[in-house]
Image (cartoon, rainbow, N blue to C red; front, side, top):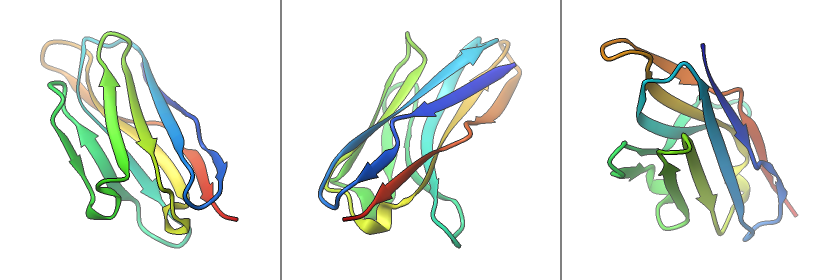
Length: 120
């Protein structure tokens, strides 16, 4: 069994910062891509940022220049540093990872989410 557990969400004022963390645990052979998604009330879940095992990153246009994704492969952690937060960043943020449980078998794993609210 593989688990992803997010932390770091909360209430922040516009212009503020938060750092989300996601820890992977369980029967893990290796981890390929990791990413952060978000779902705002009444909207579909959207990709925020991804990072490969080699460190290549991608971002949705709306967060470029404000958010930074990073990972610690040895500790099986992925982070999302969020700066200059806007009310429209308010959402539940979910961690996602492609986890190999053996040389050839992999799982798509999701965390339960952590809420981020940007409001004055």
